[in-house]
Length: 175
Image (cartoon, rainbow, N blue to C red; front, side, top):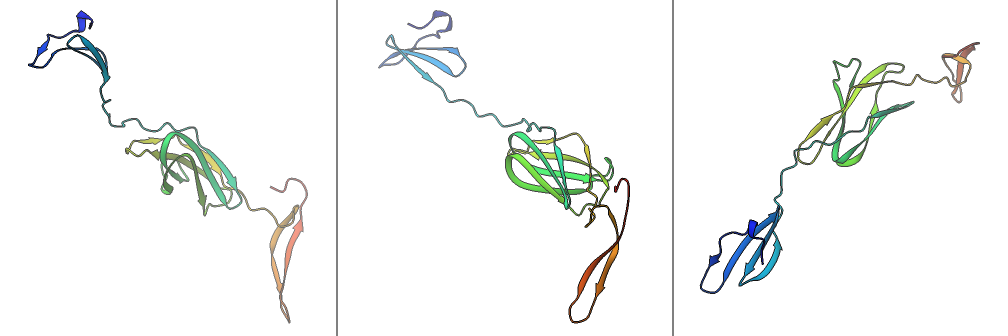
């Protein structure tokens, strides 16, 4: 028998008498001719309104640029906005693939320049998250010969062409 507090008035038809009770969300008890039957209703599908959670991004600086990496708690797109000041993040690099591990490469950076950046991820439902702004400094070019400052390259022609490094030896800190 169904609990009396949750039981509705009986529904009488020519073939059966039914009592319906709802003991909790998504559950209904039905008694037909005093034989209890339990079934679960379909869960309502609610729209996704939660943006992805972004881990703090980090910049891996290389000789040819930088790679910005971060993770999200759900599959989302990858976008990095960067520039020379936090107010002017004008350049964008992106990857439209939905993923939780994000890795966006930045190229064409000015050596030794400090860049401000932030990451943006958007999930399949269109919910967008934006990280806090952070900074990295683009790598300075390395000398072809440690301890020497490049002054130029000399080309010597003739039957063949050879390229020679022209520089001067420095002492102390080479940076």
